[in-house]
Image 1 (tube, rainbow, N blue to C red):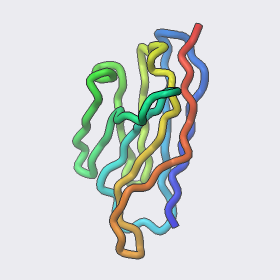
Image 2 (tube, helix red, strand yellow):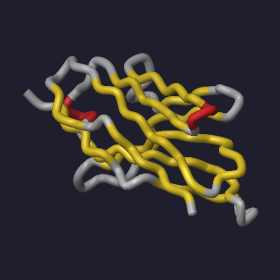
Image 3 (cartoon, one colour):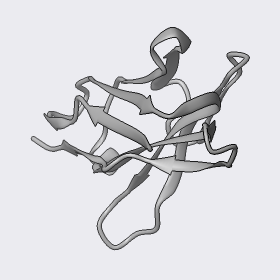
Image 4 (cartoon, rainbow, N blue to C red):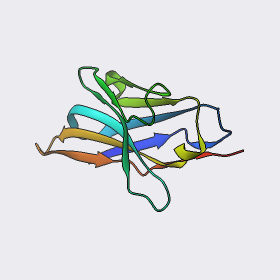
Length: 120
């Protein structure tokens, strides 16, 4: 069984910063990509950022230059440093991992989500 556990969400004022963490654990053989998605009320879930096993990073245009994704492969953990936060960044943030488990099955796994609210 594979678990992804997020932490670090909360309430922050516009212009502030937050750092999200996501740790993957369980019956993991290899992680290929870890990333973050978000879903605002009444909207579809959207891509935010991802990092590959090789360290390549990709960002949504709306967060580029404000958010930074990084990873610690030894800990199977990914981080999302969010700076210059805007009210439109308010959403539930979900961690995603594309990996192979000990069953030999390659697939996507999701965390339970963490709420980020940007408001004065």
